[in-house]
Length: 165
Ligand code: PNS
Image (cartoon, rainbow, N blue to C red; front, top):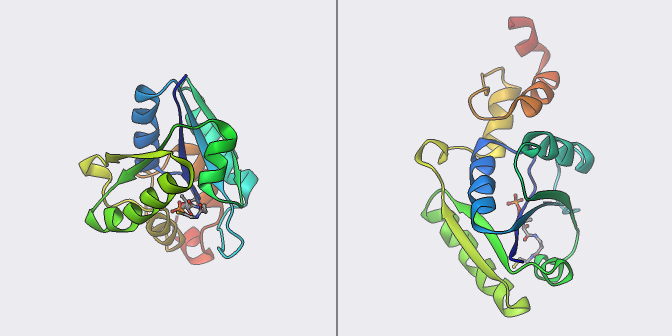
């Protein structure tokens, strides 16, 4: 069985992530969406909520598991879980510059290959950070995130944004 991992913070998961995960599911028998924790990072959503949003959103797709990645090395996680490929979406050449050394490092540490999937043109501008900022300032992010994420982002809108709705 060919098992791949799509690792990330997913803070929150957005439509660009979903598209890459769905394509990965077409290439591998099983895809693990591994939700990471980095103690140095400040998350908008806690681990349980990030996993809930991913699970709710991916429930209709077959062959996908959502689970915590833990705090350790991705290479070690891949070894532990019998993962043969890491799948990452690429939005731009700067994504590639950022990802290439990590892909090489992960292969040297564990033998696991990284597969890059080019993002769909209409998702190349999406990032969790930008979506959170737009939502926080009262902008409409309904085209960028699934419903389960939208309701949570709206619940956390600034009072100024809520008073305009
Ligand atoms: O969504 P993010 O925050 O960009 O995801 C980053 C992630 C989880 C893929 C990356 O931080 C990672 O691989 N973390 C595990 C720690 C690790 O293995 N570091 C060495 C990378 S070569």
